[in-house]
Image 1 (cartoon, helix red, strand yellow):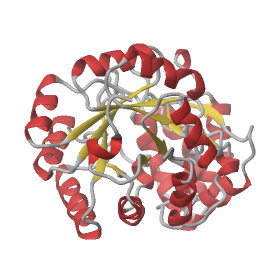
Image 2: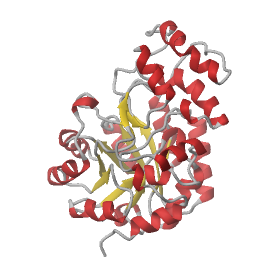
Image 3: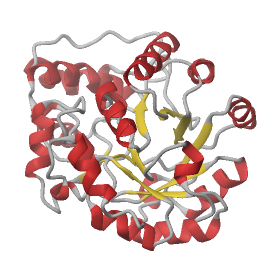
Length: 348
């Protein structure tokens, strides 16, 4: 452990909240930061104006350090002009009908420009920026350092971790295949980068010179203690916090996590076009049965229409029920209780 996360981020405990993208909430991010950890908020799909508004709201909610998260482009993202949505719209029509929404018309763009998003974050100056699906460019590393923003990279393999270390990030999240949500691999296919947390973390620790944050399968004090035994400087926890009332997850999603067992999750591209771990439901099964899955981010945009309506109706069968393999260990409904349990595993 080359540097304590507490010193790096100005926090009391080496516990980081996993960024949830569309399931992030001001309340949960602030709760983790206020408890002494590093709260995180996912800004996937946010326009610059919304990024500024969200960071301002986070500052109103907590005076403690927090991180925000962005997805870097991998270069294979589909644009509306490049993909024919007709087959996918037809295949997804029963799911649109299930929540009484019309199939959407193609947008001018699926996602905001990443440079504009990054510039907005730099202007807002959060304590930390975490990135997934790639390596921050030299200009971003320099700009973040000049503004006192810590950069966190995310790796699913030793090779990815080395590239991030060489690029100059301040810390690396080593995320094992057990973790919930998207597999954020960028050097090889996600299917070829499914290294478990227990194997990945010590190898990454040995390969890089910056603090390593263990992610995937950590849900209680035992997982925290194991991460430190493997050489990690801290942990990043998602599913255990996602179940809490402070998260933005619909009640149906929380119930699904509460009912999940060790074999309850699968890897799928059905919901977004990229490989992700979640609990199977009607939407996932129906899409996989058709075999029609648009490339990312087209598929994510297409399913987002019925998912948003399903969230308002609390229809779990039509949500992306992201969850990790340790979901059965996510037994607490309150963020403070989760944090206290995790803190009990930190070596003193």
